[in-house]
Amino acid sequence: MKRILIVEDDLISRKFLSKFMNRYGDCDLVVDGLEAIDAYLLATKEGVPYDLICLDVMMPKIDGIQVLKTIRDLEKQNGVNDNEKCKIVMTTVLGEILTVQSAFDFGCNAYASKPLDIAKLTEVLGKIGFIEERL
Image (tube, rainbow, N blue to C red; front, side, top):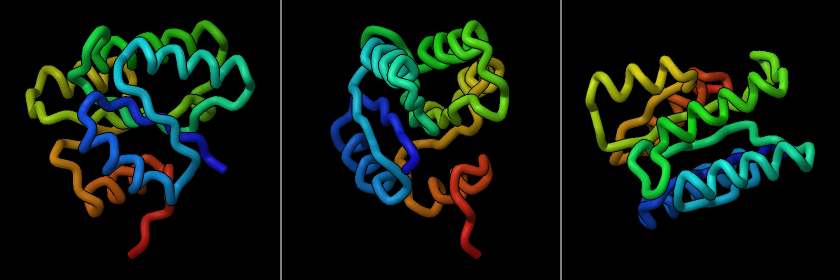
């Protein structure tokens, strides 16, 4: 069973993502960037790392871009090779070019704009190879 971490401070988005992603794996939910890093570290320490992280950009305490950078730095420090890195999809209402670009610069796999919808999210997950796209 795949492991998925949903990092989302908005209750409605968190519920939507949880309900949608449950069909693809076992979901853990956290509400801010600090909890996201803690969950990532715990999963890694237990030897059951996340396969996918859905990461909101705008969050309290630590924003999603900083969480992304921290996770990618930890993977590098621990010698995680590219095909074993967790897939990270950034989610946000922001459509700003610089935010999108910095997320890709720090190693996100994809970007999904809110409001999220099932068709778009399914397409994104297929493109990054997390699920098989159905035609």
